[in-house]
Image 1: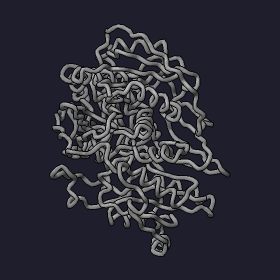
Image 2 (image 1 turned 180 degrees about the vertical axis):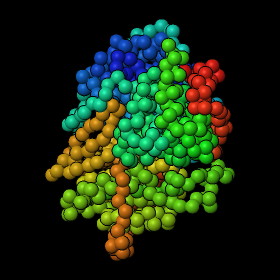
Image 3 (image 1 turned 90 degrees about the vertical axis):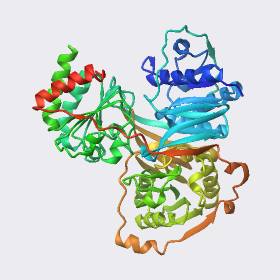
Image 4 (image 1 turned 90 degrees about the horizontal axis):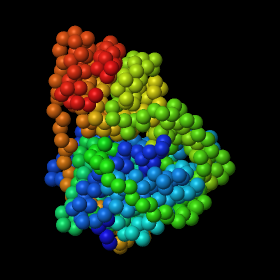
Length: 324
Length: 257
């Protein structure tokens, strides 16, 4: 087995997603210790030309599986491409993002390879030949270190938990993989797109979440305004989603999404345990709540004890002026 | 139609976790319950049964003796019977080992449709359900919210990034539930009736799983509390002044806007 690390890139809307640069960043850091190469693979339809760019972010070898049958992500068609590549190139680790794609593709891959899997990882350490992996467990109520017993390791990496590769290197020649289309056993029969051009919650550098303190669905427009001024995305608490004010896709917390943006603004959020575990690894947390005893203040870097309904429009205006 | 619902018992999500000697301090756990995603999975299965009363739902759970409580709750909610795979060390198994055991159980009970939660909210790996679909060669639909069955076709709704999707597969299939489907409460009649429902007990050896399949591919070697976040600064003054100060701090001190 080689000391190489294979990064599975994610491509969408004409560019590689930010998680891809983070995967390359961590893979590069580790490869410098193992003496191996960072390899990257892009899978999709129309990804071959863009794939060479991955070289600029540290991939010494780039593969592309470019085929009409791979246009939309499906684990059943993507996994065989990776299994074949892994069997051929024998990497020590395979990195995917802890994204909707990676979280379903990783387990398929580890099962087909009958090897180790660690999901939603936040740190890696190498000690001689041993790999240890840190990841949150119990919904973030504890942190565990795992030892890898059967290589290769398939790992999904938490978004925004790793420094991105610097970039600026040279593009790499792309090795085009032969794709044998797979007959899919599942079929998407209907799809409704909500708004396009919106920043994905888990990718957003800034998240503004509303809780019950926003008092009604109509008031989330205030949070949308602040998000648009700051270039962020809107999230919600479970109570808000359960009440039907916002869609489930915006729920932050244990049974929703885990986010780790550089700035998290909690507006009218009390800070129940199951919400905190979904956001407390954010770099900077701001809490706005009229109850000074609200648990959210215990994790906040900056707190404003006042009605979010009053504060949010003022903050939007202040940020607009600052950005002008 | 026969549905299997895979259930995992975990410390209740509302209770804090204490760690001692690199393990969860069991004496500090006030309550165990089904992992929330497994409850959503069971609710989806019950909704299929609501539309077709001939549906039989079998719960399958692996773990120590206490999993019986969770099973009784599931039977009270409306499942028909259960299989308990006794394993004191279930918590040390990796997802692939669990899937090998469940595959043996599923072959024994038979099934048309399998529901699992998208992950157990203890190790949060999200491996076993997907691995089981791979081992059994079943169509897999992940992170669903609701399911309907028409003839030999299963159809699931789910939210995806930026929209909603309906996905279809032919039975038999495996579905992981990943979005809140508020589980029903057991009725008094359900609770009384649960006591008479059959529970079959077996163990890992009884299912014929042994050797290499049981060797862990990953192993937890250390467990800690997450680093505590220091409570920060509460801003003072009128809201307008606080906001101005906050914007300044976010730009000049935290450098995040």
